[in-house]
Length: 370
Image (cartoon, rainbow, N blue to C red; front, side, top):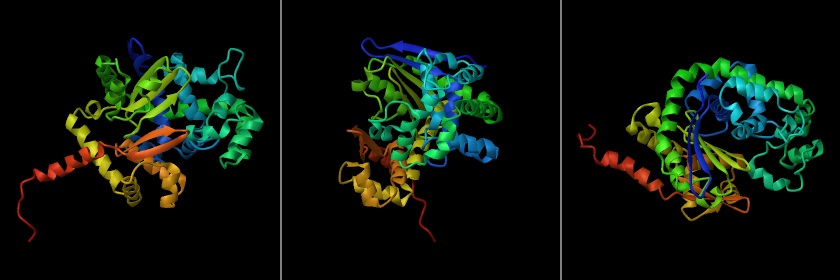
């Protein structure tokens, strides 16, 4: 298996910053985005094709384990987040599988290592956590209450909770099959691209966290800013070719791990292609009536998600999916306050739209239609 590649750097006053390339981390992220194809706008390319090719039983298992007990990221996605704290799993898929198969079955073991039931209890999305202030202790009863509080059906999920050994085996089998049946064949193409991205960022100026985030995301609003960066001991970054315009974060007590989209110039070898893909994604986002309505509404100023839901009459999950895509392509920015997300138009949006107009303004006329 390819060895882990790292580029370790440190700020004098802030957390350590490290760019990593790990097949196990990338494998877990590739699985996650293959699951997200159905529910996320703008996920494209290889994950879309893999879903068409997967054996029905493997696809069903992928979607179950990345959504149980209620919605994504599921226990498999939570396991993937947890791996950022365990560099011993990064070196090879064999190391990853050994780690998964040795997970404690309960909430944790005597050393404090999280167990299968502990992962299962902590799978709920960030935007749900504010509802669970009174349900922090991992237990069967609190799991039932959490699921019911977000409108889920506990009974089928309790069958998984009550048999953690079988659930652990299913996680390991999913990872092993997805690797052997789909991911492994892509390594000769994907690894050079990821390696080039990691190598390029070794020279980044990391004195300011905002400069690191801008370098990997190519935008001016970030999930980590200078104010909150100091709460982490490490900021870890890994490139991925499976994410479309998105970034994916794992927020852990001492670590913030981020998968960022691998730069197109390292995949296709062209700076021009990167710019064209960005513009194409923006126009894809604009090619939907509901998203255009949301942008029109936000011309009047910042709005929080429930306001947009009420104004559009759409289900909250649909609104959230549209807003995520608009944010990912750079048309919106978001800020968090009191467990609520407020969206507004991005100041960069006009810049990229103007580039499209400039392309046509520079074109020489060739006569009208006849």
